Amino acid sequence: MNSLRPRFLGSAAYRIALVYALGFAVAILLLGIAVTLVAHAAFMHQLEAQIIEDSGALVAEYQQEGHEGLNFAIGEREAGNTTSELLYAVYARDGRHIAGGLHANRPPRGWSDLDFQDRLEGPDVARAWAVDLSDGTRLVVGADWSVVERVDHMLGGIFLAAFAVVLLISMIGAVLLGAYLRHRLSAISSAADSIMAGDIKRRVPESRRRDEFDALARSLNQMLDRITALLENLRQLSGDIAHDLRTPLARLRNHLEESLEESGDPARQRDRLSSALEQTDKVLSLFAAILRISEIEGGRRRASFRSVDLTALAQEICETYAPAVEEGGRVLRSDIAHGVHVQGDSELLAQAIINLLDNAQAHTPAGTRIQFVLERESGSACILVRDDGPGVPAQALDSIFRRFVRLDPGRSTPGHGLGLNMVAAIITMHDGRLTVGDNVPGLKIGFTLPSATI
Image (cartoon, rainbow, N blue to C red; front, side):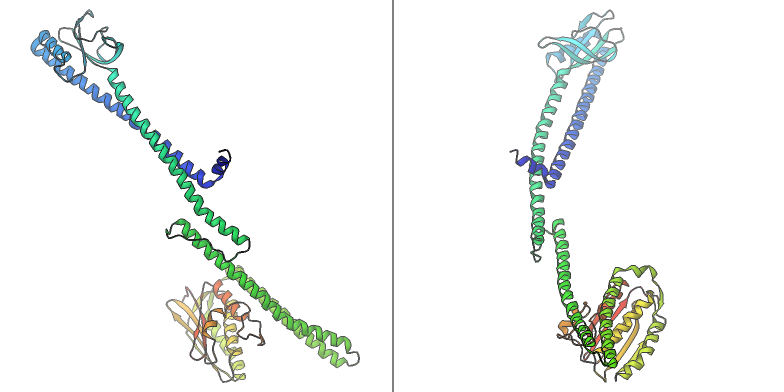
């Protein structure tokens, strides 16, 4: 028993349920006391009203029949000819008891609690109303307090019985509620323990009730799915970084070794060192791109957002890139809407547009036609880059914005697979939406910026 008590009190679920049950019991207790007091007051009011009404009837009887009629009416009431349980007395001016079965000292006029001698129960108290008659005598009508006490005892007994039942039900309900809460929470705790132990595929079970616990379970499972995806991405990222660094670092080492071995020809040493610098620049550019994406994802540049003339920005970039695209044997055409303005960072938006054009140029053969489009759509600015090149397999469309993703399994194509990931980071920071699809043939890729001022 002692071992169960700390476990019971140590459970937040049981404590909450117990507090709820005790609070409910206290509320019922206060309500019962209030009801008892109100019922007592109502009964007293009704009893006093009955006393005054009967007193008025006796005064009327006296006014019509005199003392003889009054005494006869009192005798009838006390003899049980009526259903009245009231007490009666008539007193002379000097305090002598003239009539009625209520034997006590002559009370003052109005209401009073009158001590009297009951023939069966002995000393007792009555609630009495005294009124003077026209000849100076005093009529007293009262009711035995035992009647009120019987009603109070009956109400108290009913209330105590009801309170005991309610308290018992509340405690049982508290235990059941605590057990239910503990059961639902233990499922979450068990899943968390398994995940911490290394079972990252474990999820919080969901019931069919669709209650708050299921909503919490869904949120936790979505969070766990996201964490699992991030861990998988981190593992993939580590492998991709290692792969991308291995080749330039290996070449750098070879060039440095050959430079050490070349002792006679300065020109060849210069070539070796130049190649080593080139490989070093590749490594530095990789880390610079990673740091750049991390800075963008941090969102620190949101504070510098200004109105950007997207039309002028796109026209300038397309005019600058057109000669380089044509030099590679491709054709760049642009269709740019006028007067398109958005809130954002002009440098980052320019970087996103440049990366889209670089992607189209780097992954299409000579003779490919590339089209750049800026248009208005439902109050937003939409940028799209289309080409009629080889395109991207449908199963790979969702992954091309991920970091270090390359469709070349051997990772022999130029670049690090960070260009489109940087586009995704920039557009996410601008609360935009990425679009990608099959151009049949080729690829269409772009983004939409919300809340554009056009």
